[in-house]
Image (cartoon, rainbow, N blue to C red; front, side):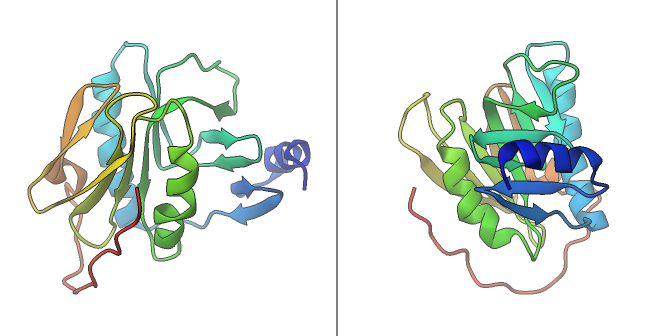
Length: 190
């Protein structure tokens, strides 16, 4: 499927699909926990953005990350103009993905690689849906080397562009997390 065919198909589809190099990937419904986490982050960032130049988009706005890759990130902060009738945002400075059982591997692999190639991106947050943990991938300056840290427990997460910090308490507000053990996260090259 070409990019043009994808846009025409997506216009009339009742379901959302991400597009990667000619392939469509249907997005499934989200759990209540996933939705609450996304809303907690989105609400905090939207309020902080206020009337400033940055816009905060939740998972209904497509993000173009390459000429042949379009994702629906859970949260994206874009500080360049986006028209009222645009269906694709570009130049995100912050992207947040909340994991799910079916997306965690892709969020930490394919999407991490694709998002880090965006010249405008300053930070990519991968928020765990099963325990209080956020992987923060960031670069100090545009074009700088990528760094990674894991925030757990009671930590704070810097969000560039909006010059704000998110706490894990804010992210996981009113979210019941399962009491199960998980293996530690595999280290990825940054």
